[in-house]
Structure formats: structure tokens, C-alpha cells
Length: 148
View (tube, helix red, strand yellow):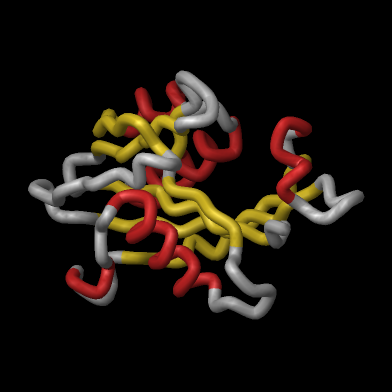
């Protein structure tokens, strides 16, 4: 069963392009890297780094130490009914913690084929519009509002 605590990582380049990945289980569901903790006491930063590596092949240990930032923001949302079966009976809400990751312009992305079928780099305003989750769009907006 999945733990109802997760991370969301907005991956971006210095020019403001944001990485979005398309889910395998839902056509046209574009999102940033997301994932649940593996164990209840897993460190959030480690979970974020693990999810980035699993979903994109990007190893943050090879990037400058300040590349990943905890955005110190969390939201609570209702788990989509189609995915509630992944959680313990009666669990309907998830707490998501936001992170950002600045990557080099020439970074190579290698998707996990069981989770995602495509990726694209978009200017952040276009990425906000393409995200299927409004909170994912809010995370991108918050990141770029803070950078201006």
C-alpha cells in the first residue's frame, strides 16, 4: 500500500523551461516528477532525489549540491478515486511536499517506461497550463514567482 505522503519536484533549466512527463496510465496527463515515500520516516529530500532518478534518470548526486531546493511548501489534496485502491482502505487524502531542481541545459532525460511515455521541456507558463493537476501548476508558478 502507498503511503499518503508524497513529493513533487519541479525540474527546470536556467532559461525557465520546465520538464513535464506524461503518465502511462492516463493519456495527456502531464506532470512534474511525483512519488510517495517508500517508508513513513523516509527523509523528504531523499525521497525527492529517489523519485527524480527513478522517473527521469537524473542523478542529483552528480549536480551541484544547491541544485535541489526544498520549497518549504506542502499541500493536502484528495486522492483521485481511480488511484485510491493503491492506499489503505479509507485513505482518501495525501500530503504533498514541493521541491525544485535546476538542471544543466544539456541534461539527458531517460524515462521509466512503466511510469511515463513522453517528456517535453516547456516555458514555465506553458507548463503551468499543460499540467493536469492544478496544484502542480501552482508549484511551478510559486517557483518562478520567487525567482523574479
